[in-house]
Length: 508
Ligand SMILES: Cc1cc2nc3c(=O)[nH]c(=O)nc-3n(C[C@H](O)[C@H](O)[C@H](O)COP(=O)(O)OP(=O)(O)OC[C@H]3O[C@@H](n4cnc5c(N)ncnc54)[C@H](O)[C@@H]3O)c2cc1C
Image (tube, rainbow, N blue to C red; front, side, top):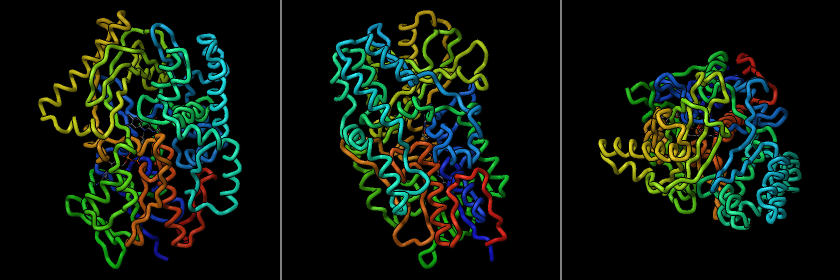
């Protein structure tokens, strides 16, 4: 039987995952990527001889034994524990000279918080107990919830049942409102600032729990190394990647996409299409709104209910060690970035990974939260003002760092600034979104079937297909798309829990 051709648009994590799973299941996958390099949002680059990591802060699924861990290993993102750095903390938040640490050792963190604020003891205990609850569960990733068989659904339900009250409470609770339950201003500030945005308490506790349980480490070598591993494995399975290949259109015959058209006019035929690029870009720019996904558009365009996080990133080099936590947040004189008033600097120092940091230097990333309205702001600037505004933001950041750490005067070097516009230019992502719909107290989890009514052989992947996005859901949605192709082709789908599975193409 002829081997079926799967075309995948986009070589981000969802596209590479889809490609690997397709190859492992006896299909032939060709990934078309608009950029000269692969990885999409999961990327890094060099400036003035330093490596700047533009993505992974933590990766859920680094703990041996969980489904996600098997899936990461199956796509060769990393191989073993030795490939992962487990950070000692989720960050330290300073407020008026008091440092509140989110140690990965949560017993130690709880004790430290109680020492800071004995009068909050009960509330602190409740907070850490919620973290403990969440350390026991993981997201359903091997199969989309709607496609789970009754046994899997029951097993998952039972697992989740014990934490269901915590889940409901944290989903419906705004982070900043929860922070007010604490009497000590430094603890209030830490809880309020840890996710630095509009998220709910669930996001804070879930992320902290992942790190505390050892399931939220960082791959050694950073984002680029992880992507290179996936790319090399995909190629070794026989997959094809065409870089510098932006897709601009599709060819439709009898409710099937039979080919895609590149901007240079070249056509690639296919039996199946997996669009793993930004989902709005695919529907709007490539499908040209000929087929509408109403539920997706309804969510996307309700910007108040569904904030989609973006960021302005300022990278600097500290030529002197300030001897602080790798993730450190301090309050500062307010300044504006886009439409957001920034009142604190959130720094992340990459020197924990010796393979990507140079001796005597610390590449530090300051991530400034941005949302849809900030994209619109940056977009409204002409070329010159855009450049000046980026420089102004960098100056504001650096002056606040020097005010807090005067020893850095003369020892800090600006390396690069990127904005939501940079993210969109590079990946075509909607309004610079680097995750999909954030969890807030006003919305609920968004799952998408990835299907498009009227098209029989298109299965969408990408961070948008399961909120809140991020690398685990990019991986999962790539595999879910292949699962649907397999179902249609009567290929027995392997969940990816046997690393390096590879079926012989001849058997189909
Ligand atoms: C600063 C930053 C920090 C982050 N930190 C974390 C973290 O710590 N943990 C975590 O889990 N997640 C993190 N994320 C989020 C994570 O990177 C994304 O959710 C994930 O990489 C999205 O993958 P994707 O495959 O869905 O999309 P993308 O990575 O956007 O991939 C889509 C690909 O499609 C390509 N493409 C677009 N249009 C076309 C076209 N017309 N033709 C061909 N190709 C096209 C793009 O160039 C891109 O390569 C971070 C992101 C950023 C920016």
